[in-house]
Image (cartoon, rainbow, N blue to C red):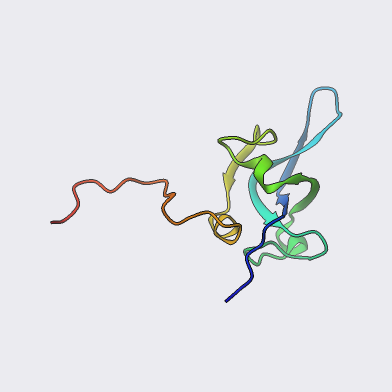
Amino acid sequence: MPKRVTNASVAAPGEWFDPDHNARSPAGEVHAWVPGTNQTVCGLALSREGLRRFSHVTWADVQPATGGYADRVTGVCRKCAAGMGERRGEKPWVRRDPRP
């Protein structure tokens, strides 16, 4: 059984700066990344995919519902979310008219 990652930083294809150019934040679809490795939790190679590292941003900070760095995040990698412990019951869809 694979070991579940508990603390990860973020990798993203883009970046943006606040108006004062004080903080660098991720933009685009974010992936979980463990510092010291060259790939994301879902297995993408950082250099091959052109992902930028954000070691100062934690995975919890980019969640669209609660994160402070989620302003320009367009999506969260579902495989990385599963590797970080998101439960299966948290589905973005709703079953309508289920079979009896």
